[in-house]
Image (cartoon, rainbow, N blue to C red; front, top):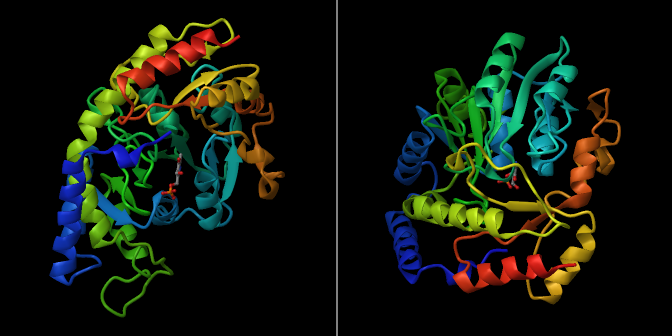
Length: 362
Ligand SMILES: Cc1ncc(COP(=O)(O)O)c(C=O)c1O
């Protein structure tokens, strides 16, 4: 699904130089490289502030805790996400509540979220699944009217854009992951909180560093979750390649949408605006998904499933609160969704081969 060894030798050279610069500087944590990356990524995301943290899951926990969301508070999110989204809610001490997804997009259904709101609801975590943003005005209005926070899980949506605003700038804060396989990935774990709220910014800066405000003063029970200088320097190099890589992802996705045509395959709903999708993943659906997956593997085409087990079917979450109407769309999606290769290292020949193989599937 990814071929990092194929990345341009020029990029590798710049990343090595960036890492060497940090090693030679003797300053490895909370230094100038982090400040510089925080400022450039926040700007890319149309946000005033960025707080580099250890990973995307910590970014969500830190946002929740920055908003004083914890024990007794309910946070609504989707069962069709990485386990980390929900784990972060548990880690903050809050109560996750799962709403169903829209069957056409795979994204949270606003109608189902509305069913889940109670007097204890403090926030919705909107996951821009596979890299797509949709109906952001509706989400902003709904959460404002319901007097709850809108938090964006942007782990898959680097550079996704709608009405000239980027993922992470619609709600109170956005959580980014720079896990190596993400569209903007580090050489290890990394994440960021982006926000336009000075209060969230100040609290997140404190929480990521043991709840410390000044040396040896700890007004909060914080975490140790800092994005280190080497990762920040590497990300600052990789950021320069991100737009080009995203353009390639979008071109591949466009070809898949137009050229994959097989009665056994269903496409997800096309985004209204191409820029609103960053195509971290390209997902198709098939009733005989396992059969298709094996057929593709026999043709040397790797695929993955995002996600085969919805959150409420995971062992620790069997009793999780949920929409009283059930989560049947998420369950169906989990049985039929298949992610096919969509990354900037794919060659034209490989894309042709993938399209051809899927069209020949019977
Ligand atoms: C939607 C989503 N949220 C959160 C995360 C967590 O990010 P990380 O692995 O950096 O903790 C991921 C990454 O797997 C993700 O895909």
